[in-house]
Length: 136
Image 1: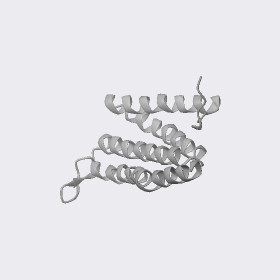
Image 2 (image 1 turned 120 degrees about the horizontal axis):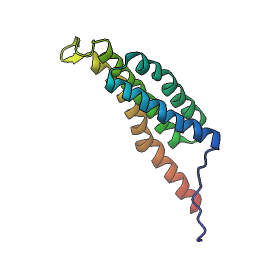
Image 3 (image 1 turned 30 degrees about the vertical axis):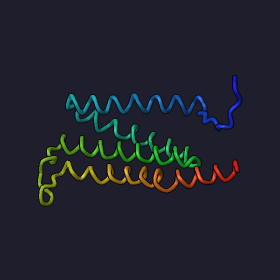
Image 4 (image 1 turned 120 degrees about the vertical axis):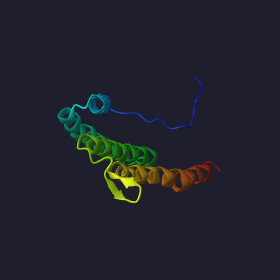
């Protein structure tokens, strides 16, 4: 096997199990949304979002992981708000102009996108430049 200078990213098993449960909670939340099981869908927001925040916190030392995990937490927030807006039927209520209750979920969607945009436009190029300088 050839030697590589690329660093490896490993996750402790207990963290990986939590990440896998996160996927289960997320799927139950979205299935509940699809099936209009309001109580279960809303209840699943809590563990799904909580684990997403914990994952982001645990990866805060690795800029790429932090950016992506914050985007995921905001995606879950937006997705959950959208679900709740449909459950309580304010998704089509006009808020301003053509924007409805459902469109308020764009705020966390956009915030997550901005985290990723910053990472890829600013942070990642700086990391690559620093890495290139260290090799030279």
